[in-house]
Image (tube, rainbow, N blue to C red; front, side):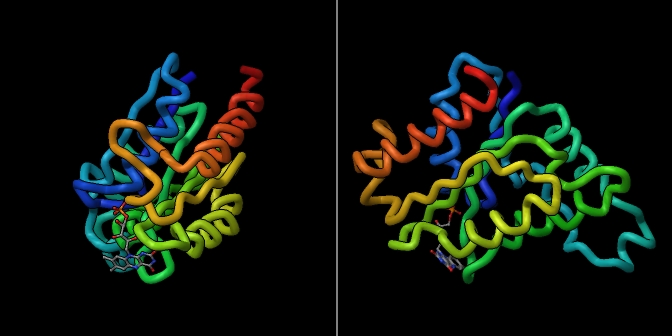
Length: 179
Ligand SMILES: Cc1cc2nc3c(=O)[nH]c(=O)nc-3n(C[C@H](O)[C@H](O)[C@H](O)COP(=O)(O)O)c2cc1C
């Protein structure tokens, strides 16, 4: 099984990337690739730009990564209650590729975390509602609040309640693949 993970963030110290890596570690006997959105940075989406120059190759490259995966593990950074500009820009460009949906109908474990007590609840809600219409087959969602209080770089999620929640959701994701 090919697993593709990425954080909806372009921060080199992304806490969402740490959460993606942690969640991916529960699937450690699979082929796992974690993308960095910085490798897919494109000019801000603009219709005139698309008309003039077409869709950037990086958008096709990103779509290809999605299409060649069996499972996506995504954790979204919340900026002003919504997607980070870095993630939204890739989403917008990829959504312009004809003949496919942005998330390619690939099963998805959708998460969010933030330093605050809401754990990215707003962006998670937005994505949970929108992604299915953009080919995101959301199997489970998970939010980790107050990241620095509940996560340790070496140990992962330290709060037992949240750890068990994620373990259970990963269990249902695995069940989807009969594992
Ligand atoms: C412009 C900006 C807006 C933000 N807005 C929110 C917000 O609405 N809700 C929230 O929980 N955190 C917000 N934050 C804090 C982010 O959750 C925090 O920077 C987090 O580390 C982002 O995830 P990342 O480390 O994966 O990039 C904001 C941060 C920035 C820079």
